[in-house]
Image (cartoon, rainbow, N blue to C red):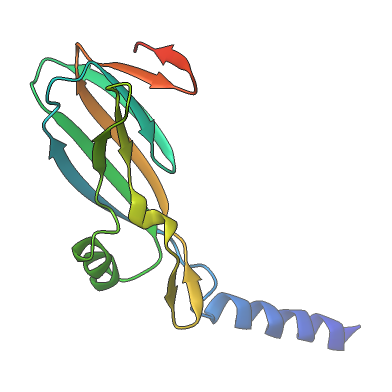
Length: 139
């Protein structure tokens, strides 16, 4: 019985002192602004949760929160190559669709797939309506 207790103590110590365990996620915040042009409806196709705020400015501001366990150098490099670039393109119906196409690509660091958690705070001019999943959201 004493041997089992010692084994659990050693196992617990190894788990707690291993750098892979107990790592907390860091948050990096990026801010981008877009010119809304002349469109009045938008659809948001971004992976992750988002909050939409209306404001009286003439531009769109997107705050991207990236929760990750990588170094700041890795996030900076991924930003430089366009991983977190938001694109706004008009579709055939004249609606603008917001996407981040580079997020579809896998990133592998030291033979481990890198996964970040993204969330967004989107500030839209008050005249723009959000269309999502064929229903109109008018926050």
